[in-house]
Length: 274
Image (cartoon, rainbow, N blue to C red; front, top):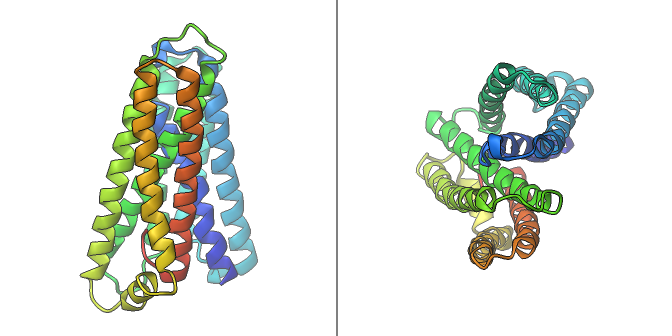
């Protein structure tokens, strides 16, 4: 049980690393100072390394009984290695290396997320359930990365005071789209497992009953709050008030993080892809 708890919550670091890396592609590279990408990538590389260290510790402690599969651990190791190459390339004038490392790291990260999400699927649940779990994990990564990178990008305007607002507008639009996509993806995932037979009946009863119903309500309420914050950020940028929008991004990143924590608690306790 302790190993499963740790494995479930370690995935939060993976969502942040992969989603954050992909969100870094939203601001035009040619219009931003290299320092933004260096500092932001360092945060996500650290998250990836913490995930790998945690998974390796679980494998070392529990051996074959660990919930971490060899495929998942190797995929995260590969992602972290290529992400490290991309981070180093930010200090070099090698555009070809930087572009290839970013693309490969993004693909490896998405693959690692899908593999790890699939490890939470009960035996015999079927391919549809595996797809549902993967979709839920990937959508969570996008919105987590969008909110955190939006926060970091807004903070960068304190350093580069002459930066055009267009990058922040684009990040806001990406955050709003990612949030809506996650809501649709989770409803899709829950519908798939609900129609998938008896495998998830106990989990569905626990999630939508008295025991964990409050957590499901909290998940939905946090989505609603995140949507309100997305609209407030958009309107604040229209004024424009960059620092106020950045403050709202800080709150949005916190709201999204709490929502993902609630989702992972539900995954741990009910086995459902919230």
